[in-house]
Length: 373
Ligand SMILES: *[C@@H]1O[C@H](CO)[C@@H](O)[C@H](O)[C@H]1NC(C)=O
Ligand SMILES: *[C@@H]1O[C@H](CO)[C@@H](O)[C@H](O)[C@H]1NC(C)=O
Image 1 (cartoon, rainbow, N blue to C red):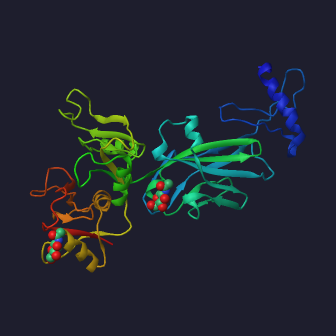
Image 2: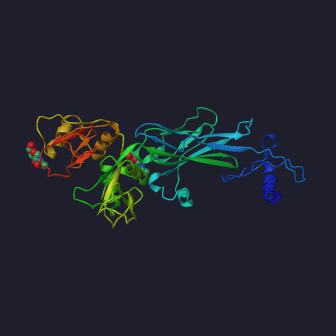
Image 3: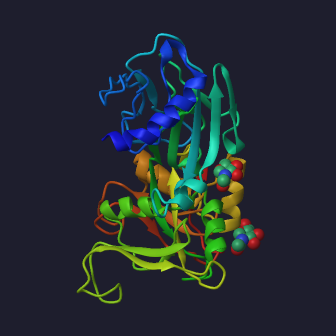
């Protein structure tokens, strides 16, 4: 025991030069579960009286889920044990690991990829990058360093780290941020397996969505998504979700699951895409119009109504998150024709809820149209 303490003792005497109020001796400490001690008052006989002071950083919630466009609070609190009487110069740093880059949790590479969200010291604070002007600390009580993010965007999801730094001390916790939303498979108007990774990224963006993360696809699979075409995910891997094993989809002998093709080449390989869409700000509706419309007319009719023709991601979000239900096929912005069903009934497609698709019919054919504003 004593031999373990000796090196610490040296550090401690050294740092005593920076003697803190009350004669506490602070030692740089890592988050390794050890409880390092102030041993400046040992009596030299191998008996040491410990005045351990410990910085605790905690979050009551390991993960938080929120809606796009809303505000979210990622909880983080710190306190000293035992309490310290004098106020201390505590700094807090929030950093972030975007969810599309979370591959190997807690690996040193992952830590290196964390980017800063904000740093604060006293009343001064500074936010960075895409978070500038959108984040603040809640400070509802002493030690409350919870991060408030406004105007949540699709790509804000990921693992946030709250790090409290007190001179030589440094402790952190992480909070996962998820968005409520919906995953949908998407293929090119030109046919199946036409997107390389970058094309897939663009295709989702064009539909007011983003490439889904593995966690989002996995959740969708748990909720019953079954799709026998492989699609890109945000981390550059290719997967497809199967709930009912069958031939041609990995075979009947393979258990249900999210099948993986692993990491594929972003330029050379082509697949479909799994997009993720979250709650929409505006509203989506089926346009009342006396006649059916070809695609050109459909685009114009929404414009005349003060709207835009709706995107696929918007239709999925309205179906999944708002219960949008309409048994009328309508044009969408990408030239596909679809309709959303939440209450299954006769003549409205298969016996489970879903967004029905007619694919990409010739643009001179006449249907209704879904508009968004
Ligand atoms: C995240 O989305 C916002 C809004 O869509 C965009 O402006 C920003 O560039 C995106 N950030 C990244 C890192 O992709
Ligand atoms: C749709 O109909 C209009 C006439 O109302 C025609 O000018 C236009 O070319 C048609 N568009 C397509 C894609 O067929």
